[in-house]
Image (cartoon, rainbow, N blue to C red):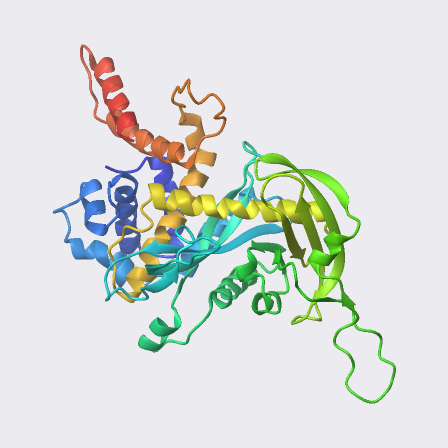
Length: 436
């Protein structure tokens, strides 16, 4: 089964990344990836209906040995996203990591990693698997202005200290990998302004002090973070000039005083907060002024929280709204694992591990872009009387539309004629929609 020709046109954008032979095999694997019940190479070959036409090792080599760069592939994906970005506005990015559960001691890079799904505040759970740091572009499309999508473009495999020493590779923390990807993307488009949004794991001094010149950052801050004023002007006295000014109240202490009340539409609902904000500097990065925002929820279980942004002219409400869009990357991780088999590829060599699972994230981006550009014209929502509040197509609907359109195009080429041909075509299309 081949994907619909309009999606095949999308894949031709990567002719600048791969050779013609590799791109042909890659396109076949993508067709299999869309239709396969399990996402490993052999299942993709069977789903694409090319088993026996070519030796299966040719398809394994696409990820394990072919000469192409995952970064170049991701930058090509970013160029496809650019037409949907607003001119004159900063490109919003989301940074986070996710765990792919695995089994097997010989898998390159596999190790024990923190599992956020099984862990709680009082109980930490680690699992064996692969940890990937992901950089995504947050886009709001005209048809869904209130629904941000996090579209992955760059991915890095994280090796813990034991695996890095075992593989004789330099150990790099997750924040260091995030900074690497930010520099790759920001250098690729030096004329654009970027703004990264990340949780506290990627909001420390190692990221804040090494941001690209054309990139800002919004992240979380601890309630007891040490904040300082700007250093005083030099007095001409002997000795080293002061790096920090007077100590300022912590975010928790800011909320102990007077604060204004605001109601914001974030995380899909209306919430009321007490808000305080100021300009301050972190202890470890005293030369970077920050807009610090402390909030206290007046309802629900969020309690007190603090955030910061390197954009000093940003209002407190804008800082909170930007950070709330970070949640879209969690939705991307869920959909990629649930519908595209992010954890299913059975690879063990270095290049195969670094390329195969991340391709599920990049394929998520391609399917969303195809649906927004072409697929939404063919989307037929299924009637669900028990779910009247659904107003937008989910990623599962986008994938089902891609499958059903591919099947419809194939049925239309069969040339079924004669008495009852129209009814036969409708039955086949209905069956393919149910299968999708």
